[in-house]
Length: 403
Image (cartoon, one colour):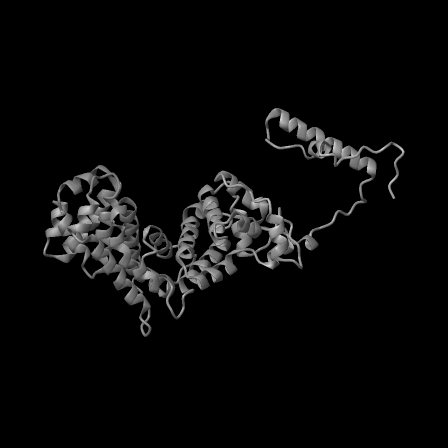
């Protein structure tokens, strides 16, 4: 009866009130979702979603969204037979037109943002569960870009409704489709979307820096979206993005990752043990920004940040990274481990070691390497043993005195 009133009532008020109760039932009682799917109202649900009304858009999107959990709903049929993708794309297009109109203020009705967010959540779930039909939602990309860049949303935090669902929606869509390249990288302002996403990331780095849960759940998709935009971007946009996201000379005046810049924040979180997904996504982003070349990667972020990532993927750490650093910045050599300029490193304040102290330290290191090799902790060749075998180490007499 509830479903009948929701979709068969001639009164829009009765229909919407019934839909609100239906949404609550589907939310609170999971078993009702399959019961609803079994009633066979697919055609009427998708037809009602085409209505140019924010209440209907919100309620129908919520019903469909909830039925993507724990049911056998046939998403392929909803898209192919009942034109679900067309309805979602059209609703997003309407939102973009209302929000981007140059001579009119943005809508003030709270239901406008609520309906938009629900449509985006539905889009994300459908494209996540029905990857065979993702191309049907490619027309949603231009309005999403318009909403992100020109939506005039006044939000207290960078990744709240509807910005976060807009970013998330990009993750499952075909960013590389030729038909949408002009929207992603407009000829007159090709860096518009990339700059917008990086700006959101910068604000998020300040807002959520001490909240690992927020970083993991909301910032990770944003970094993933930036990575996708970079992957398909033309050369000039890639160059601009790398200039904003890779460490600059100012970052190298100290050990990489310690300054207050956005690249340093990304580097710090690329080793954040509390946010495994964010950590992985940031490392992949830096690798992409380095043309997926191990040597360039080490040049950009230093051995310290690069070695773990390369090792986990079975990629050899390049042996010539320090030489590449010297070629890149011949006037200011860089420490290949920390990424800091050598002339900016702090020098030890104490007196230099005596010959006796150096001898004892060398013996200590020799013993340490031998223990590690014997215990199988590390598969490493003792450099002192190698030097002895190659005849590069000379034993000096006890009465030897240096010049």
